[in-house]
Image (cartoon, rainbow, N blue to C red; front, side, top):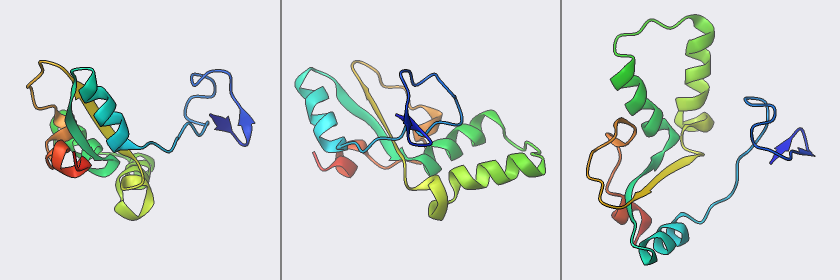
Length: 112
């Protein structure tokens, strides 16, 4: 984790300012989870994940200009929307979560 090229001792330092992104081998992670009895329950990009959450919890919400700009940065496919992914792993869980309502099948997407 880094904040302006400075290593942080905790991911809870400088929340919202620090870059805590990491490169993840999603298929390997899902396969390791499967070997422990868990399975991939959802896999999608940030755009679809956040769109699902916003549509469920903020239907018809009016956002101010700065909120709209922040959402645009997070959601737009050519900004951050497709650069980050979300993987849900679990056991004995069948409920479809709002963040994955627009997601394709996780197993198919991960190629496992």
